[in-house]
Length: 350
Image (cartoon, rainbow, N blue to C red):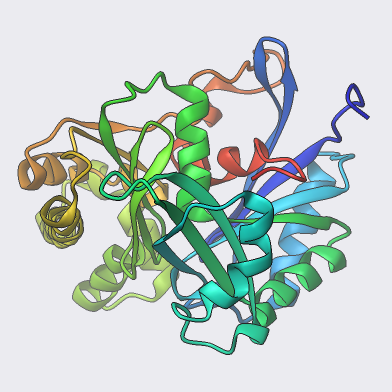
């Protein structure tokens, strides 16, 4: 029905180190924060985007849903890295209905798996600037067994998974919900999690370039483990207290890993700039738990020579001061970009 009330839905970002849950309610004035929570996952629960310890992930989601007294029964999650294939392709201009009939045949040429083993989705981006008889189409595919693993985890946690998104596009949703973007401006959205960095170059609501790099906050922990001879838990604690400890060895590790991440970011964005006809990047927004690592923004700024800003996924979300602790939200906001973007999604969205 045209005026039927939209069901409440929860955005659940299952990262390799934690599960982030956000519930938003959409009103005339925008989104209102209903629920938010973050819980850690055991080490190795997720390895290379594969759910290795499903029971721990189920328990963590259940704990969040129970602790936050969530009534919603539908959820949205996302995938990234080698779990998903994203290709920008050029096709003859045709109606959406016709493309829906043809997309599997078109996708076969670009996907290195049996087409019967993957789920395929697409979005028509824009007419081809060089050839008006063609259009740019974003093709997204994921293996069915990966999607089935997520469906099973959510079902076991008591939730119905209604949308599976992509991390990069979820961050883009969070950005577009909270910022007034200049239609001519090209921005890079860089989300740095524990084990993966998602890069998405965007202009006027259209994704121009995406890349996932297997690098993230775990690199700091691994280096601290090696240098100090600690287990992963102790190394993680040491990482979190790095700036207050004043330990020069620790500061040196942070700076070296910051430099590694900044260089990897520069390589990817240089590749976009060298191949893009759509305009050069003018600003970078950082998000993700590792994005707020001390001195990382300075390293990125030096390497990219571009304005850098931390993305605030709650910038325009209405928050009740009596229901939420401002200090807590400020602390967790950088790691909520994917979850907030997911929470804006609804069944039937494109």
